[in-house]
Image (cartoon, rainbow, N blue to C red):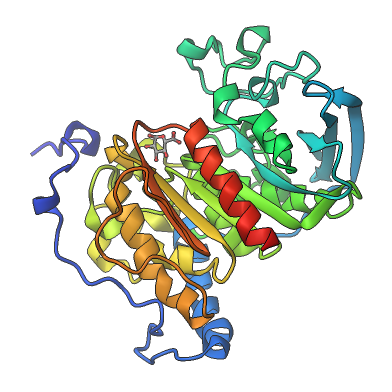
Length: 410
Ligand code: GCU
């Protein structure tokens, strides 16, 4: 019999067909022991969970590599209608006779001396986040998107400013925050080729692909965010203790993993991150582990393939990824029409992670019943589901800015 490929089946969008499953308890060790205190959580349970996600889901970074130098490529004192400073900073990495570099675009409000910042990857290059003609266009390989004028896997003038609605730079600046963003393709091009991007800089001799428990692309992109943090800590215009990591979709998965592995990030926002991000895998609603591993074989480590169509065997679920971020502020956001990312699974994940926030006396979401559309709960662990589709909108940013101010300054 010929086996039918997984992506030819209809995904499940029927709540009645969601399997009955036991949600792993974040406050219970794999051996069954209960965790009752912050010391037990931080000393034993958190490390065992982090270890599981590292070796079986995202993959471990196989060595240390810090930037060997950085260069301010361009800067100006009059960006965004004169309200902001702009810097474009290149970080340079050298190893294994190879060099990799990437460009961070930074806007900072002129009226704040050490600014808190939102930071996150963009999908199609720094020049897409505003119409600013001074932003350098990346020459890295990119996924095509014809509706944005991106063809031949290259970026050019046609796409300047095309993702501006997803960034709301002016509102961020007006709220007294800076923005630091970079193109994820400069760290690792988003294709199933592990000979480009950052991976080969950390290969051993003759290695062509990561080992089964070594980093996929999400872990590589997360690594990149930590290296940007290394730079932000050196930039005196920035308050590196107040960096709010933001990510949409695959880059939301990335931001969650980056803040689980690097506790310097003060807060994190997961926008529509779905499968392998905030959504519970064991619900098998919309995108599943089998589908994501089939379509994006390079995102996770190879060991994660063990759980394709085999979610029952997973000893963890994604609420425990969220719990790894506790007690730092965490915002999970869904969109009503984004069924592929399983909004209810994202909500439940926040709900089941709340017990760990409670351990720290911090609030999350208390009701197992889903929230109504456009009715956010903005606690330390926050959630909203908004009207509309898979995207980042002005509404989302209004919530994030309001919540980040509350969490970082009140
Ligand atoms: C695909 C993928 C999702 C991902 C999304 C995105 O839809 O299946 O897992 O989140 O792309 O990054 O936009």
